[in-house]
Structures are given as structure tokens and as C-alpha cells.
Length: 594
Image 1: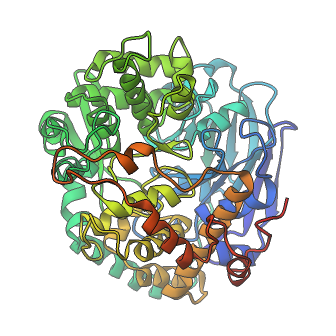
Image 2: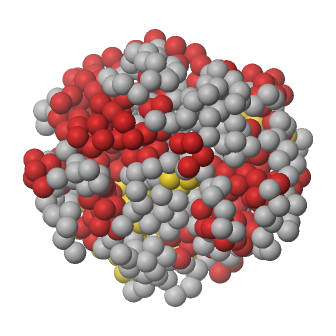
Image 3: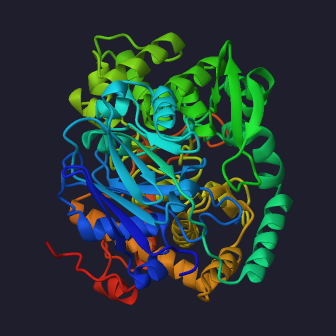
């Protein structure tokens, strides 16, 4: 088989047994890998009512058919599970080098099931599995855990692990690989912690076989050239990293400030990509097979780390009313070591700050206090004091105080774009299968950056159709598994040509869009059965007009976009896929089935 190995590694932690299984070739052809393959396995094997932190949930690691090749940005992998934070199907992908090494173990997927009797780590060497006692690394951060596991396995091994937050089952704990890269959102680190699994080390020798090397090299070169010509991937991201967006988004009045109370942060320049480069930048870094190199190595005092990314700068900066780039970087370093999603961590602290300033908390946690923010990160990871409540995310935290100040959708905190200033992002948040996520359909591309073309960010017309297109191609790209930033420069034909050359199976751009549509509907079907929340936004965004900046006076006009979106999707008026849609996409199953 070309592109894929056609193998799945099933690891049962309860019985300490592992076995290699064949993956149906039709499943690979129709779901590709990564997000799509993970969704299909979860849909088939984990019932929607399964306790996300119980032994019945599964943690599914997947690579794609381009992983292990020289395709630009093909160094990523995906993890899928049922989220303890949202209750939805949830995938999170990560860069670095772990994904390539996982594929080299001769597998396309790894399913972790059951629960170990004691804290355990795994060493997977070319498909063979060793179950090892992790007693000596209980409570260690992700850096120390990685160092220990590498020392006790092989210096060439790549490691994915959880920190104290995952062990404590913080509902937004993440999984860290290669010390600094994160499968960040949705609490998959808590799922890993619930399984008593501290770390996974992988080492392999199996190469990805390419069906048509000459055709692939031609397709790869075309993709690489396109990336090197696009101003976003050629200049902005390599020079500033994702933090280039701080001033851009603030300028249009869509940088959420003080828990989304405003869309303009007067001190944005102090936390911008320009300031980051001037004050704490050391060098850039890149994931495997990436010609872009958006990563930042930074240094604050004697401490060096990677990041912060744009979303993190916002979460610990504007959202918390903090204008100190050094403090934001330190918060990022802490989260990476403790194993916390920076977006939900910052947004939950911002929620607490608003509750405090409105007199709803006995703890006084004011906006702009960086020292308090840094202390709260530790308390959250260890579930100490008020951190124990914050560790459940902003929705549950706000509900504890009968307050409506959680800026989340389906329990997932929204990121760094106020949809009152970018209407299409409001629809994207509301309809994302993960909850409040910008990555399912990155409407900022068209509404702000003009890719593939510029649309009026404050109008609703045409946004539903454009979002469906973005969501479908993004689902396919996530299943290849390639970096989302490649989409600034590449079109579906680029991806189809590389995929066809690698697998020897003819794929067109239309085929990829159909695959993406199939994946999106499968995820939606799972969420409907799981009873995921409705497609809406926090009341604030629908009723409170922005009072400053270049989006002043606007709210999100969601309803007018939502019904058009449902019609285009082939869903009913409650957002459930119609039987005809399910049948056309070859998904199987009934939205009304138990």
C-alpha cells in the first residue's frame, strides 16, 4: 500500500496488551487519516453517552497519507476523543516531530483504550509496545517527563506526554510533544490522565512508500513554490510568527478585551508581534517538513521557551487586560510545562476577573494583574483553592455563580477574534463541531487577510456558503495531516495532486471537498447523538454593541446566516443532518437512532 501502512495499533491499558490490526482500505480512501480517520474510529467504537473520563472513552492517535513524505508541512499528527470539557467529538492536532516518528512505527493509527492500574508510560518501537512504570515521574512537568522518558528509552525517541494538569484531570489539560508543541484544546490531556497514561515514546524505521515519485516531486515543488510566493507564508509568519495578527485584529476593532467586553485594546502595541520580536525573540523554529517556520524561541530573564502564539498573547494579554509581553511569555512557558491549553486557561481567568470586578467573587482578581494571573495558572494545574473550580473551564465556573460571563460555545472558550467585528467568524464559532473554535473554518482569511479573496467583514451576505467551503477543505487538510497555514498559499488542487501521486489513487479537488464534507457531517452526527449544545453564541455577542474601535456599534447577526448555512449543509432547521445528506455521503447511521 502506498501512502498508508494500512495498520492500526490497539493498546489496552487495563490488560497491558497490544496488537496490530488491519485498517480497511475503503476507510482510508474515504476518510484519509488524521482527523477523518480518528472521527470514523471514534464514531464506530465510542458511544456518544460514554463518560469522557471513564475507561470506555478512547484516545486515538492518527497520521495521514502524506505524513513521512517531503510534502510541505506534513509533520503533524492528530488525536481524537470525546472531550471532557465539551462532551463533543474532539480532535486536536500538533506539529513538531512526534507525528513523523509515529508513522515510522509502521502504523497509521493508535487506539488507546481502558485504564492502567498505575501511572504508566509506553515505549513503541517499530510497532512493538512496552508498558513501563511511571512511578518515578508522578507530578513532573512535561519537560522533565520528556527528559526522563528519552533517557530511559532511546535518545532518538520522540515523546508526547501530560503534565500535572493532565494527572489532575483539569478539563482543559493538553498533550505536549517535543517539549513545546501541543495538542492543545478540548482536554485530551485529561483523558490521557484518566487512563493513568503519563507519556508515549515512539521510535520507528518504516518509511512512507510513494506510488509515483516523479509526479510527487513535481507536485511537491509546485506546492513549495506557492508557499514561498505567498506574502503570509513567505514573509509575515516567518518574520513575526502568528503574533503578527495582534495589531491587525486590534486595528479593525475585533481583538476581544477584558473577557469580550470590548474589541479594542489600547495597549495592543505593547504585546504585538513587533514588540515580541524586539524584546524577547531569540530565533525562529519550524516543525518537520515545514518551509514556513512560524515558531518563536523566546527568552525572559534566564528562562527560554517557545511561543507565545497569537492566541496565547491574546488570552493572557488583551483578554486579561495585561500589557506585559514578558509576563505573557512566562504564562505560556508555565502552561507548556504544566500541560494546559493556553486559550481556555486565559479565557477562564478573564471570566473570573470579570466576576470579581462585578462583586460576584470573594477572591479579588482584577484585570491587568499579571502576578495574580501567573499564580492562578499554578493553582489551576494543581486544582488548589479557587483553581479547583477554574480547572473545570469558564462555563462551569460561571454557572457556579449563576453568572452569564463565560465566552464559550458548547463549553469551549472562543479564541482571539470578536465576531461582532467579523460576522463570518460568529457563524464559524456557532457551527464548529468542537465548540468555540476558529480552526474549523478560518473566516479571518477572507474577512481580514483577503485569502483567497477579500469579503466585507461586517456583512452577512454570502458568509454561509463561504464558511461551508472553508470547513470542508479544512477537514480534508486536517486529515492529510497538513498545517492549516498551508491553506493561505495552496488550493485544493495542490493537495489533490500530492495525495494522488503518493497513494497512486486519483483524487480531484472535488473529491477532497466531498471527503471534507463527509467528515464534517460524521462529526455532526456524533454530536447530535451526544446531545451537544445548540448552535449559538454568548448573549453578549448577540445583544451588546461594541462601543469603541472600527467595529463600533456592531453585534453578531447570527440567525440570518444560520438558517442559510443549514440549508446549504443539507441539515434540518435544528442543525441535524438530513437522511438524504447522510446517504449521499455514504456515512451510514440515523440521526434519530439510539
